[in-house]
Image (cartoon, rainbow, N blue to C red; front, side):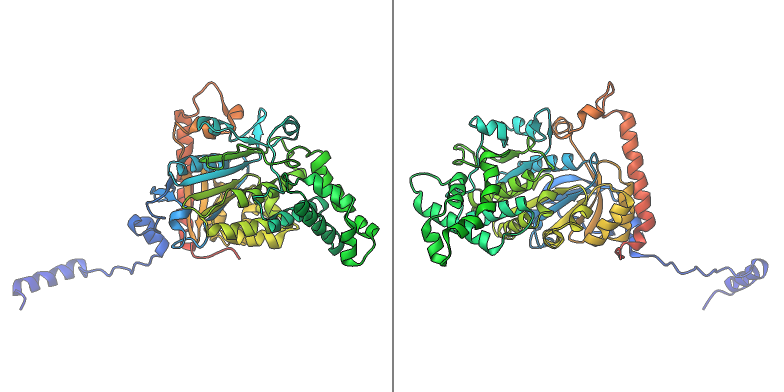
Length: 469
């Protein structure tokens, strides 16, 4: 029972001031708002095993990523797609990622380096730092006893050799082989492999056999010998480009002895090849298949195959088919394929849309740097990104990217150490000045950009569950 004095006091107070107790309005909040206020409840990271990428822009947590650690639990496939305009930090990310992966003793990396300056590839500095000589594929150097890769290397199965020959021809011709041309190629390849045993068969042997087929080839099909010769003429002309044309010397001969496939980093320098010519996808097809049969082995090593200018692969239906097999095969043997592409729309709207979609589907990790608004929307539709991520992509500054790791989407600031900085930045000629690139002004600009991105994310976190239509 309440004290009578308390009852009288409460009544008098209510008379003077009105009702003492007030009703608090109910608090309504979204999951995203709760995560913003209580950071421990934010979306979980990717674990604490792997290589450090940087930090999440919004929460400030460290961001660690490793496809080999995540595979089977958070990742259905270990493959990775990197997108974005030039000058936003893709190259720096790739290089620091590789350098940090190589700190693990069971990691091995192959890079197809299609860019460069001053006569060497982008990865030349890193190769020098690690005491590695890049494998420079150069038609002029090949004529002077340079590096050669033989598509008919005995290390490649006969089935793989024939598939590679067909791909080379189809890429160069821009269409598939008809039945008659395919038969002529198959017969010539079989004859060369059966009759040349004292040395490695080479492409010039195939060309010679196509131009001068054996009578047995015509008899087996009950056709005239001149018909078989005519069927193989176009095929011979295409392969002749690798024998006597602008690509001569690199593939018409036994594979160069001494290529170290056990080195921690293997760099194929393609910077001397015109990136916009038909030669580039042909080169990538040959290197890819050669590596499949000579480099990928059933041991305990974890392998990373990084391809610059990968649209040459994804945008060619014939090369893409070869790499689809490589990606599926590699998943059983610890292979992570990293494809670096500038514009996704150029790929998915091209002639190889079906093949491109298949490869993109295998890439469970997607990193997207700054793009224009229309490009970001197209990328979001293809990759199924959340709406807030699509809207923030055009506002990203260099070094900051949207990471989508099998649906776990974060905005991440890539961090480069002072030791790595001189090795990984490729735009020094455009950015070097009398001032130190790490001065206070640049630091302040980076901080301001991160704060803008964080504010944008806070505003749009409520939409984090919706995706682009």
